[in-house]
Image 1 (cartoon, helix red, strand yellow):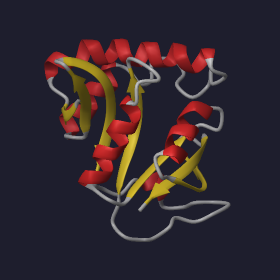
Image 2 (spheres, helix red, strand yellow):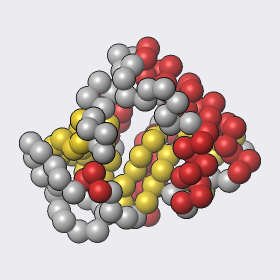
Image 3 (cartoon, rainbow, N blue to C red):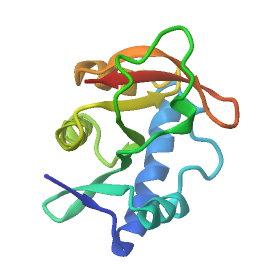
Image 4 (tube, rainbow, N blue to C red):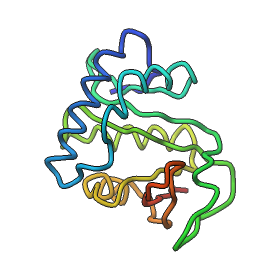
Length: 160
C-alpha cells in the first residue's frame, strides 16, 4: 500500500468510498455522523484543491481516503473534559473512509500520517465505536471533547 495526494482521477472512486462508509456507519450504530451529502466527491475536490486530500492505494486501486494537514484546526483550540497531550505544532486528520473493512487499511493510513508528523490530532463521533477502537489500537489517547463549528460534539484523540 502507498499514500499519495488525491488526484482528479480519484474523485469518482472517493465519492463511492464515502457513500459506502455512510452505509457502514449506519449499519454499525452511527447514523448521525455523516448526514446528507457530507462528505462527498465535492468535499474530496475541495480537500484536493487545498492540498490536504490523500488516498491510500493498494495495487493501483484506491482503497481509502482522508484529509491530512500539518496545520492548526480551529475547532481544536478549545477542548472540554480533558486536555491535549501537548501544545506543540500538530497535524490533523479528517474524513477517514475505507473501501474494505477489517484489512488494516486505516491502521496503515494512520501509521503513515504519524510517520509524516509525529504529533497527530483527530476526532470522531461518540457513536463511531469502530473508529474509536482503531484509534486506541493505533496509539491515540482519548483527550476530551471538542465542538465543530456547527456545534456538533466530537471525541478528540491525540497521538504523540
